[in-house]
Image 1 (cartoon, rainbow, N blue to C red):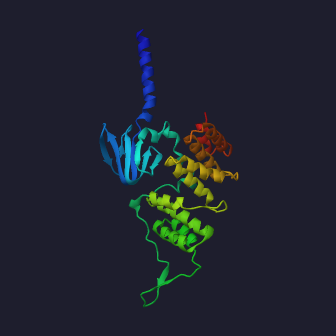
Image 2 (cartoon, rainbow, N blue to C red):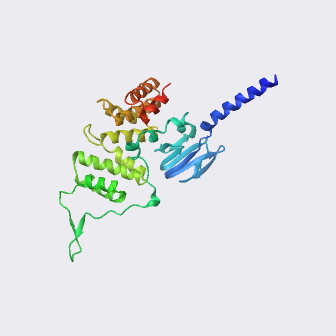
Image 3 (cartoon, one colour):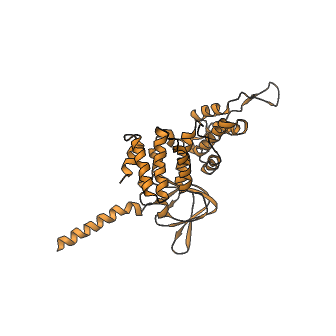
Length: 296
């Protein structure tokens, strides 16, 4: 009889330990504009700032036209609208499965990873040269290639210079080049730790299916929308991209992301179908393996 009680107690303890990581997931405040608080007790709210931790199981209140990025382990959660949120709802039942920034591959994950501000950024060079003995600037002519020069600056680590060039490109370029300048500007804003303006820049773009940056745009926007629980918007972007039956790494990433967007909308069958498509495109890739592990 005593042995049964001990075994039963051990079984209960194992179940508690299994459930504990999900129930005890704290949230780290990575970025904040506005006011962010969590509830302590019935009517007491504690304000938090960047670098603070929100204990698990708390209600969270965002106000003052706020914008917040929280992390639960490797998962990013974005709050874009004022309101009261339950931390358990934000984290979900399986936060370890939602680390899609880690499994998207370096090509895409690098577009979302914020740089360390402590490293500083190179100051942009002026596009022009002062005339000898004069106090005016002689600007370059229409042959200036803001997109190519901006990409070169970005690849060299000159984020500030790239930002200025892409901004100029959104003004002086047109068509596909202008749209790509806007996309690259949004990426640089994200890298420089300005996610709110990055989101505004990226959301305003209406890319064409033939734009050369459409692969990266789709994966970035799908990720950002899912992280802010805007699953219908994520599904819209991903479906538009996938309807032409694209192939390769971007298609595989898009199918994985659409599995999350479908799940978020309560369509478990469609979510599984997208996971299977992601696996079919490359079962041995990191994305394919992640999708395979998520299948029941």
